[in-house]
Length: 475
Ligand SMILES: NC(=O)c1ccc[n+]([C@@H]2O[C@H](COP(=O)([O-])OP(=O)(O)OC[C@H]3O[C@@H](n4cnc5c(N)ncnc54)[C@H](O)[C@@H]3O)[C@@H](O)[C@H]2O)c1
Image 1 (tube, rainbow, N blue to C red):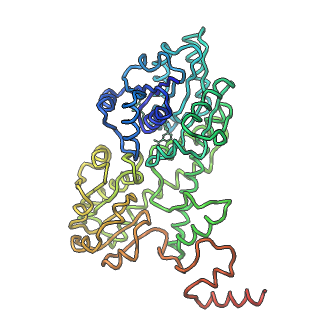
Image 2: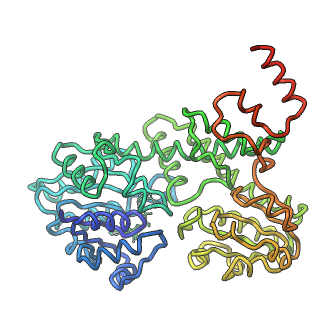
Image 3: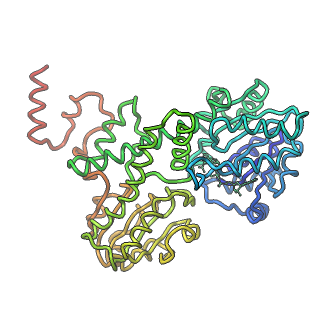
């Protein structure tokens, strides 16, 4: 097939490279000429594992092209994907569809008869209808289709997620568009059983409903983590205890500093606005958003508490600036409000990210000093804050680090370092949600009943013994 992709961001580039690998001829358009020039030189403007190789492969096989005008890409295309940004509209919190409608305007004159225009961007319900009207108004004689195909890939695992998705959702208004898109996905190795066909509006809503649900799960476990700290419980055991329930599932139950990134915050905001518009209030999502904002703000207080309440004049090393590991995406990253709050409190900030120091400069306070390694950032620090769970931070030599810092304090906002190792190296360790160690380290993670649990448990407290006796008596 001949495919055009409008927008060469995280979604557009990954989709284009994967479709090209499936043997299709894909032309990408972006209004950012510098980005297009980079891609034409063989450079990749974003950090995403495996993507560089896939793009190089597509270019070498002459299946993947980058241009800056829509005419060259859309003319003759069977399918035109719209993969431009849909950020939050600053004035009111709705999804800003300016990029989408500008992209539609640019493609209309070149659309061939029978072409399918597909929104891969996350767009509010009804956007497909509007696009259909826009195109129909300009080209009333044209036979075309508008479909929805929201993208669920995760930054940092985008290529894997695209090629091995849990599901592909296709929202179409005709069999023709649905089968065309289904064939396209099957051609890149995705099993037909993984493809969900639905109408366009349901498809548009599926994306928001999914992201809203995941954001809810994260906000919920963060509140539970906060409660763990107050009542002296262990979040690790609590998440395991609820995650083993198949109705709940263990994923997205990792407590942290609050969700960020290019999708969850803006999609949750847009979902709340959609609910408002249609008089179907999204009260849960509204609360999730408020909870997450409070969570992000409270992270600076955690750092202050670890520094005996005093931040003024203290040197704080922030390790990891992106919204999560394995991406260079800084959108809505927790490091931004954290650095702002620490800066406002008079701290001296040193920061290091394995891939995003450059991008961070545009969004972090101007006084931040950027370092070329974690060790350089930690040198002379009064506290080290792990804000993103990059693997290289877990592999640091903490004993060496101990000799370099002014005060041995580590605040692990991702609960991902080894608390024992950190403490053995002479640091004080502050994680999230109470003690990190499980109450019984010998307990099997796959418990089936209480009996083997107590049989395998290493050390037992009096209350455990009492419970065992009661259980034995009950049997
Ligand atoms: N980033 C993710 O992990 C992710 C995951 C799933 C879905 N999404 C959704 O996919 C969409 C794209 O997200 P992204 O992160 O790839 O965005 P992005 O901001 O990284 O990229 C968008 C690209 O579109 C280009 N663009 C803007 N207007 C254009 C136009 N008229 N013609 C051609 N190009 C144009 C921009 O220059 C930019 O390069 C969004 O709706 C987002 O919500 C993103």
